[in-house]
Image (cartoon, rainbow, N blue to C red; front, side, top):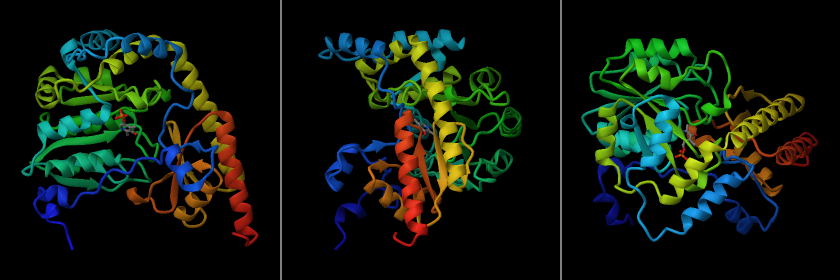
Length: 373
Ligand SMILES: *Cc1c(COP(=O)(O)O)cnc(C)c1O
């Protein structure tokens, strides 16, 4: 019997599904009794936090009886200086996910619509659905966002366009010309949300500099996070750079203390530790090469990625491959919920974690071709 508590929920929520996170190591250990899992499922920085962050956390822990600074004064000031923008342009969030939701709460309701791409980061679909707005999902072009088609998809109800650059789970990115063409094509009142969760990893010359574009296009909202390259996924802190009026709207809908005192302190320390960041980026680059050559020698296709993960095609059912990897102690991410039914996404880990993954993959492929699968 269906519970009466479904029927009385808002219709937009009744048809939604919850976000599926990467399997936590503890859960995999409980389920499978394996104790030495490697987790390559959530695009985390595999190195552990920077020592400077740990010191800042220990210090900030002394004052957790106090509420955080609800305006994040110091962190905003540092970010504003770094990016050469006014403090009023910065909005802080509990992860950039929070910002993506704040944008939906402030700008979307059942009379409006949001545009995002097929295979686009799932949070866009969730935030749109929750707000009751119409989703205008634009077909991807060879797994990448088709920005020209996304610009065309804008209707007069459209308030927000979500662009992940690079995108998760495909790792594809839009170049400077494609992005500026979209910005030139869409009405100046439509918010173009450029989600740069992985921007630190990219050094391609044609990768757009979102924050300098924001200075030219007032409707551009750039979101950044400390969860990936900065190694603070567990602390939930991210931000946006936008027109100050947009920031004001987001501030109206956020929780008064949405970023914890520990997160503020850690983010400040993380910004100071440039060595940790550059080492993380270098490690990622080496790991990406390890994966690309590993996939090539195993004869597996993959989607070229600019981020800290890579999505590859499995030669038999991805769900079965996922199970077999789990039994070998490797947690990767199924992406069937994105419609990528024959793929798995793997995050770049430490060198020996990457090796564990590639070896497990090789063993699975060997036993499947010899019929022992
Ligand atoms: C991980 C990720 C985010 C942000 O995550 P937070 O931890 O909430 O900052 C945002 N966008 C994309 C595309 C991501 O993959």
